[in-house]
Image (cartoon, rainbow, N blue to C red; front, top):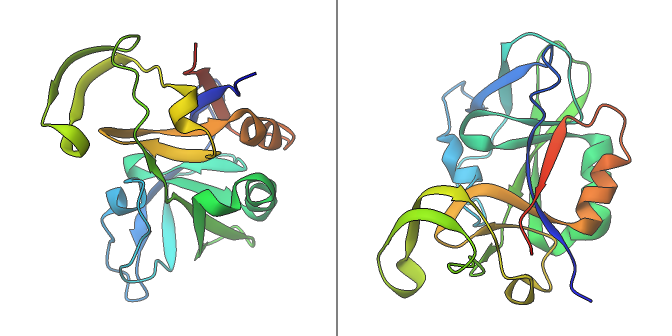
Length: 185
């Protein structure tokens, strides 16, 4: 039996949730957020904080600029319990919340894009450098994704992909703030 995988994204049905800005370094300088959404370990200046771009109700898993996941301590614990090898966490301060938050960085970039079942406009490049543009439907090959619980797709790193195990762990949290779309057949 193959495990199911899902694209995880913010829940648009929670209309009163907050929105977060880009990560900031200790001096208040903005860190390019996409560096935490590329499926690779982050090696730059450590993030220190983020600003609340739009006030609202905090959720356990938020997505800041460039689809960067920001998680509460409870979400970090839930995700780490099943996906330790696939992610790293950076503690950050969100002023006024009184809680510790973490940037979640998926450090695995998996070559599992199913070109026969996905719907996309074009692909550019060759081999590991292939990029999928204008993707309307993402389908991944679960066999090629086996052994990973949280990752980005090589050639299409916009989506954060989670296994059924991570999905269940996140869904166990109240007001988790995440929607899931199945990406395996």
